[in-house]
Image (cartoon, rainbow, N blue to C red):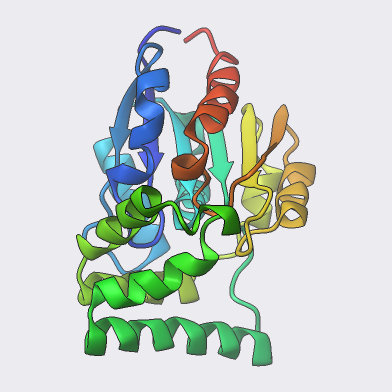
Length: 241
């Protein structure tokens, strides 16, 4: 299994920093490659970019929006995905009616803050609900997240919001996932709940590892990298390739 190709997909406004804390544990057994979404404005385009950059077969892990991109990769090219990991994510399309309208309103409100007051101001507001409440006083963690967002532009934020609001429903994709699949979230993830991950795990017909990371919110890979890396290593050892 040494050197298994592992594609790591970041989420909304995130980059390699969201995966970096895991790399010391993962790199001895995996050739890790972090994807950059660039200016892509659809989940399908993001997924195609992954496939264009990836080797013929690979393990695939997505965090948050990256999990949705990973599911779209699986829809487009299931024969290329050896292992699948879905972290702090979802699988349904945007809700119809009032609930969907409210999601769009909240996302565009953050976009307006990013344009009028700057990415840092928006990220400083956004991060309040993204980490375990006990970590909000951890200035090193919070600054790492805010700085990560600040490396992106408001135009990129707008494109990624557009992609999320038009996200495809991946229910049928989950039902086709025959490969070993890790489904993981922080216990205090207020954006992607444990029950949502239990739904995901219940729909996967292949071998599933459902893991809940203690003392973590939505940014589990940065909040509790040791625990997340342990779960991912267990998952990676499901193949001899």
